Length: 289
Image (cartoon, rainbow, N blue to C red; front, side, top):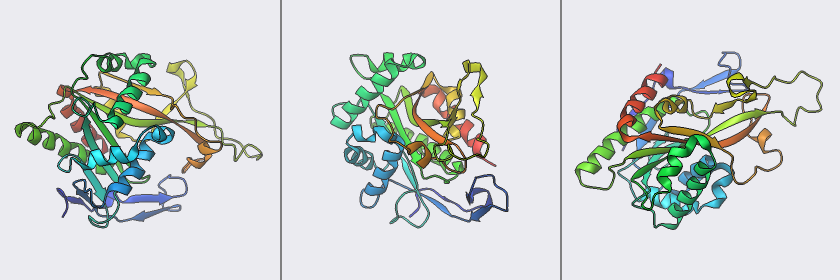
């Protein structure tokens, strides 16, 4: 059965088109009913692994993704999956939280902590996170992992965050180890790069967007629009380059609804526990039509 509720509304239709412009001439609308479920180890393992690989991008090969999926599925009362054709199908989106302090001795979490420490220590804007991760005892940080299939609308995300808040509160009441001091959200950004597919064509190329405030550096964009809101509530946030370089031509393989290529990067957002509920309310207001 559905975890909490389902969404079936014109405002939540999935937009499918050639360029994402939203015009009736080039966009098909598919009416979809979304349902939320508890993570289910009987059916979600392979779908969850696919979404985790997408989230970690080229650096996914640095980790035991199977072990990470198993850990998420071992907490079925915490976190959510989103599906459209019933519980027995693969998830189109997921959200979960892992207590880094509690699971620090598991190899996959050891690897993740080492990875996050390296990335934050080499990124000046993530100094506060680096300091936390460098403590002799890892604090009770809740690592939030979430991703979704392209074209799944942002409206499915706020209910997952809202339910997570409820589930964490219930777990604390049951004296389970989810009394976090901070939430750390692992996500992705991207920058636009010149398309190699179009390099030999004579038609004008799309101009690259520049961020004047950053002194002419290439502008970063959000894969997930809600991240723009979450960043406003962070103690610190920053982007980092992946350890593993993407393969030749990968930037063009990732392009969607646009003429340019895409170069992804990792993103980390650290939110203090006291500000997390406010941040969740803010993204709910932001993505609600």
